[in-house]
Image (tube, rainbow, N blue to C red; front, side, top):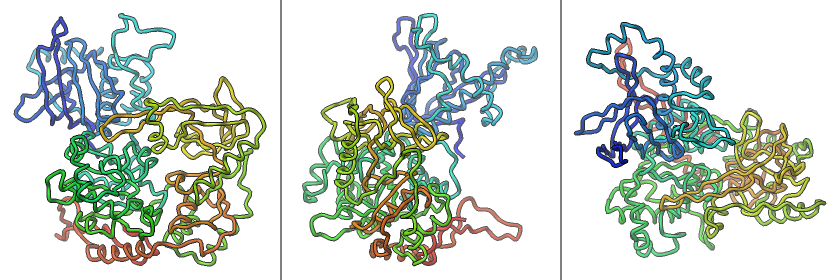
Length: 635
């Protein structure tokens, strides 16, 4: 478990005089912060760095600016001494935990200070002694949450919309309850196999982790991103939508060589331009999501580019690689008549010496029968009994409360035609919602990297899909289906399966290769009579229909079927076993991987320990016997 009392990051501390001029400062790129307590119960934050004396600042009368916390940045202003501490390049998850711990401890301390014993006050004349603050307890968290809506020394209540900030209010920060509200940084505890992957990534090893659809690969990836220093970590994905989902950029944007059509020499020249070269040389951790859709030739090219631009002969120029994806899902888009080449078919893949893991626990579906069917479909094997079960869904009525099933199409154009024609067929006037983009000239880039449209046309009765997690407990999640009931105050009122909701503007943020941020503000809805299989990756659909007669890629049927939440919310028309197949190269890759893993099936992990018999325990981490079992077993 991460120590939430300590934080490694870049620190800058400035002390101002009465004229507002800096008269003292402390700056260090690799500092360590910890929360400590004096022998008279005062809480301090200590900043230490190599070859520098530690600085202790009392946490009293402070305000915290945490708007950019998910980027690893925050500032703490000590108003009583006119001093500000600036934090940057902090692993976002650790920063969130550190600030939360600071708030919880100070909230609990407020009531204690008023009743300080006489003995404690007398001790205050002695030299101060310090000790590290104990970890936060559940009782302290509950107490802090109960007080979050009330004003405290550190986090006053939010101001009323009708009342502006006056000099008497001071310059204190936003309400601390935001530390407990929804955050871009996931905070659910990791299970055993996820922790195994996390530890491997934080140890600096090159890692490839895989798993079937719905096993939480992207969720874990967000946690990994949040545990690494932002300034030297680049999160990328093979597609724009996948990149937006993890808060990153596309691999093509990062590489600086376009789509890779240029020769290797020309590609090296393009990546050696000042802007691109700086990005390559600054990166220490490169994350690539949906690695299955990255063309093998492109992967080899950027590996060579990395070595040349970084002037380092190690694989990828010494950058740590963290790859995520499932090769049984959608493959790379083939160019002209050339056969598809996967990343694992390249010498670059072998040279990276990737530690491989598989997530086995399925989170999207809870129906064991459906999970077994999907596991068979994934590897291109569908027994007759399972084929009959899928075919039987064609007679299911899955519509509810006027919400029709979303039709998954193998081609994007087919989905667009269906949506446009269905909308035109509805009576009534259209309501048009145009997105507010931070840079209108980059609207096309935002179209490619976000799931939300620039121009949204709706009518009463339109079938829509929610594109943002609004309320998990109420089922208002990304992919939830609904129908437009009315328009109130210019906003669509949507009836979802379990709740009515007025959809108001939400914000999407997209990063550029240079570190800038583009934003799009739009109603979080999209027409959902039909959707393409490619665009559905990462979604969980609670009412979906499909015809797989036009599938043209291996894994396409599996991706489509695995979007469904359960067999009861799925309707498959004219299903045939011939519509399901897996790429032979992928099957061979996983079989060869099985042989490699079997040779290293038993290896010691963790600290060296000795049992009563004197034998050091050995932990089994990987096994795969046959394609009908998981790739990796972690016990």
